[in-house]
Every structure is written in C-alpha cells, then in structure tokens.
Image 1 (cartoon, rainbow, N blue to C red):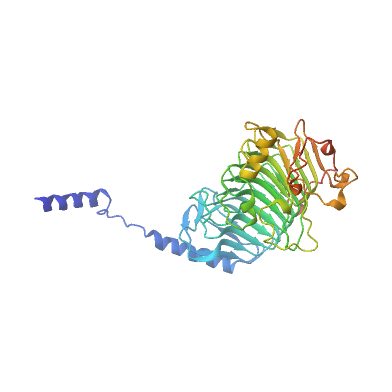
Image 2 (tube, rainbow, N blue to C red):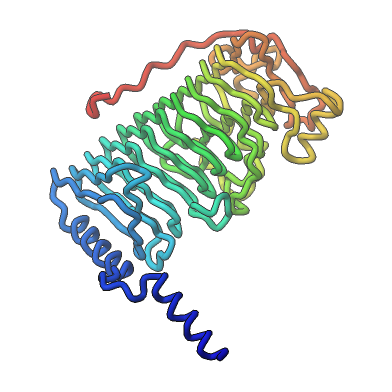
Length: 415
C-alpha cells in the first residue's frame, strides 16, 4: 500500500506540473543559444546604418559580445524589458565591448557580467541612452569593475541610464573629451559616477545614492591625458554610505564610505546647485594624491599635478553628513575638533597644496584657489601634510570667486 500511494502521489505531481500536457515545452537553453548566435552574427556582420534589435525578454548570454563597426544602433524595447543576462558567462572579459564611432546603444539591460558590463574603447560621437547595467546579487567585490565604461572617447552622451552594483564605478568616463552625463541613476556601486582624466565634462540631473562615494572627479598618474574642466550641478547626491567593496589595491578602494562628491588631484572643477546630504564622512571631499591610500603603488609621471586647484563651490543645498566618517583617523580628527557628538563641516580639504603656488600668507594664489560661495558652508583644512598641526575651519581664504566654466556642447549629437 505504501508503494502504491507513492506512485499515486508521483502521478498527481506530474499532472499538476504539466507533465502530461500535450502542448510542446520550450527548450529555453536552445532558444538562448539560438538568440546568442543570431546576435553575435548581427554584430560581426553589421554595416554602417544598421539597427540591431534586442527583443523583449531575458536572454542568457554565455560569451562576451563585441561591436567594431561604426554607425550602428543597438536597440532594445526598454531597460527593464530587453535584458542580456551574463550570469552563466564562460568566455570574454566584458559583456559588450565596443570599438567604434557614431553609434547608439539604448533601451536595454546588461546584467551580471563577469567583468565590465559595457566597455567602449576609443571612438567619438557616442550615445548611451536608457541602458541599465546591474549585478543582481548586490554589492560584492567579485562583481565586475565598471558598469558603463567609455575610455579614450570624444563627444559622449550618457543619459537616463541606471548603474547598480559595480565594484569600481557604475558610470565611468576616462581619458575622454567633451562629455555629458545627465539624468542617470547610480546606486550601490563603490563609485556612483566617476570622471577621470577627462577634459570637459558636464555631470547634471543625476540621482546618486547608496554608493561608497557619490560623484568622483579624479586625475590619476601614468595615463595619457590629464583632465580638467568638469561641472557637477543639479544632482541629488544623498546618503552614499555603503561600505567600500572595491578590490584591494585599486584607487577606488581608498574612497571613504560616506563621501558625497570627491575631487582628487583635479583642476578647474565647479560644484553648484546640487542637493548634497547625509554623506557620513563629508558631503564634499577635496584631496590630493598624497592623502590617498594608494600613493607608492603608482609612479607619478613628470607632467602629473597631484594637487586639486581652481575649485569653485557655490549655490548647493547641503544638509546632514559628516557625523560618522569612515576610518579611525578621520573619526579621531572629528572628535578632536568637534567632540563626540560633532560633525565635519560640508567641505573637507586635506590641505595639501603646491608650495610654488602659494602667496606670502601660505594661501593658494587666486587663480588656483578653492573658492566657496555657498551660504554658511565652510571648509575644514585638515592640514594632513603636517600631521594636522595647523587645522583651519572656515578660513577667509576660501571666500572668493572664480571664472565660471563654459557649458559642454554636443552639437554633433543634437545636444
């Protein structure tokens, strides 16, 4: 009787689960392989002017994709509708690698790649629009480093994208020229948005929250181009307090959790008209190469300028932040200056400056100054180069103005 009962239960389970259905059951793996083969063929054989479509659905991809033809559009039906999932990726260093110009990628998602999600290597006149890159397991050092990753590019528009879970930067532009990053959302990355060694970038209209650091404007040594002239404005940069999960030894691993905007060794940077709030280390950090955790791991080129200069901060709406800085040294500094219940002010500067650019009072000459015209916001000069012996808070040297940077124009892209 027990054997018969077991058989009856098995039969009932098969019937309930559709095992006796006369309708053919789709072999999903075969369908995925067929789609992958079709997409690979289209990318390889593409001609200028082609439009390659990604239909609705979650499509499992096992190998990296590449596009090397200019003038192509890759288009899905929506970033939450047309999904390229690389969860089972066994080949390739990226999800999609593009080495081309005059192309558009829009309305699709790239998930769970083994390495970078969307890497663009060189090229000009590039539009990335409504693309989502995500590691669906959440913050993890094993996630790919970069979500959207253009390098050595020119005339780039990144808009209305979403980047989640990158172990370096969700949206990154490096060694590029003439860039607009607007109306995107970056969450749970180490760096939400990063502009590195780039000349001429406008970063605006973005929502950046729950990253380790919100928006980073960096200059690194040993790269082909030194960057300058970045405007960060009209963004919402709130509660970027996720523990740093960057790979040990990488520059981004030195970013303190709780950093809103970080300017490191970059010049001619404007921060204005942003909502910046509740970033536990500081809402704005201005630092040199010397106060990071990676000095000594990279050899500085002769032309490299390790100091942040010509920084203009004005018209932002600051609130909260600075109450629980990341790291024992910063915590000790906060307590020593402001007490156990005190907070850092909105703007934290490490205090390193080029001695050749100082006036008789030891302040930066006007053209290199850090200027703040932002209601009651003040600068804490932490004087880290002198073991914080001469800390200054709210010094009059920062009550100044600089010539404003011009707007970035992408006329070739209709923007």
